[in-house]
Length: 298
Image 1 (cartoon, helix red, strand yellow):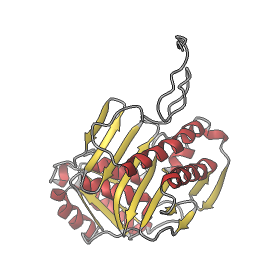
Image 2 (cartoon, helix red, strand yellow):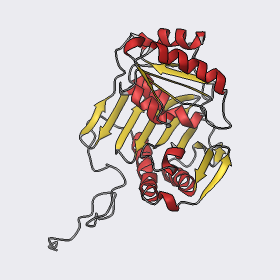
Image 3 (cartoon, one colour):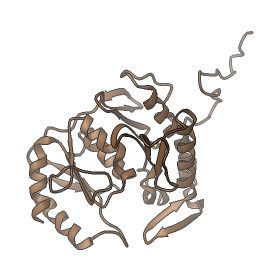
């Protein structure tokens, strides 16, 4: 059968791309780095959720919003994104456990667990700020072994597997290996952070630490999406990142990304970080001791 010139071509695993149809991610770009079947499943789940998030982001003022607590909002987009991710992951890994920000925990096989933030940066999303991400981590026997962080608006896909490195796919580059920065002097360092909001955290204690960091570094940035902050450390965009009171779904994928990019993750006292711990510090090895000193003395 001869195809008409204007007839869309069906691609393997995807429906025909009709003129003007919006892509939900860049799966048609071939990766230059080897991806396991698990990473491929995680990426597909992130792209499926991203399709709905991008549509809802374009209609952000029409979203129905309810409050989970003071200053902590959840939208229907958030809940639908988690359901989409969960369903996509369950199609190929039905026995795995699941821990999500919105839907709670499913125990699963007791060995493997997905840890998911379907919309990291919800407040940004609801205010029309185009800086948010889908974060998916895979924990196996209490160790994070794979992670995916996807920013739908910039179309940046960060991904990492334990022992195989960390990478980023962008609209202009495929599978570029991530490396943390080499800066060792705090005076030259750009540091990311998260500021406690209404009803959350020790504001006075945090502000003392923030003041100490601003006095010793080249600058501090607060973007409001911890998963992307960690991805930025892995990519060398930030030299360090610290925050207090982060949940497992905020950081599961990101901490693996930093480590696989040659960085180190601890608490702000330099002790080993555990998921759900009271504080987190991510940086390159050369800057870690200085950041621990600055934060511990504040």
